[in-house]
Image (cartoon, rainbow, N blue to C red; front, side, top):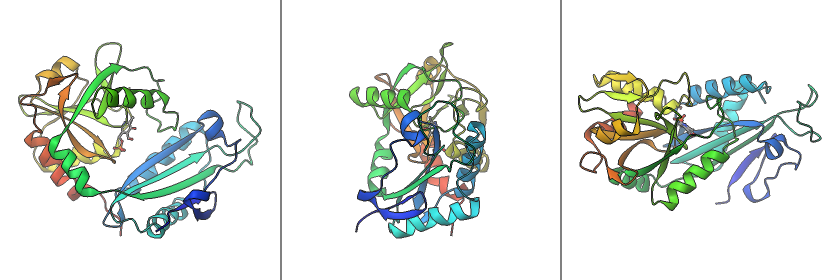
Length: 286
Ligand code: PLP
């Protein structure tokens, strides 16, 4: 079945989905995005993703491309037209098309909106989670506003590529003080020897992940203690478990950091349980 994309008001075959060369997303990475999991044909945590999108747009002073209700309809329609049961939904909003000039275009410029959906093999993702992933660490060289989910992702691209070249699945950024900030496309967590979950506060240095927020709820329902504080790579190496969270990975156990096994080098019980219970706390659309 051919894929369909939503591009600036129209549903078009994926292969013919194009945007203008002067779209500011293309020229300046002047835009924001969201990625949602699709499960059994339903969008997971749509409300939270749309709230974060609205915040990102506000921070960059980009107008919403349409009302939240209309956008929700487009998202669900894109999933439906692509017959996605298990997969991912991507949406991107840019400041629109205008003659190249750094400062904002005139107030009437319409934001650009692209929505795509694709199928993903859930069994493959589960197999990966059963094995866990390795991570590498590298210096965080991103700008300070990583709380905004912008499409300006070159440092993240380079970090993920470095991970791949090292045979790892993710790269953890480390700040100037030696504390882990987050992954190239995920939030970073450890489980201490005492069994507490530790993840960096969302106030600085990270994106407030939707999966992260939901994991707080799963942890509370599972009577697990959560400490929102920064941790160093050395503490992660002493931890009982480590894992990352993202809509694309849910809860993914980390079994190795810079080549050193975490604990016994196998996915830990807490990470596995959080993954298994995640969708009890997530909001799954109808
Ligand atoms: N941090 C970064 C830099 C990300 O790119 C992502 C997801 O893409 C996350 C964290 C996790 O966010 P979420 O759980 O909303 O997918």
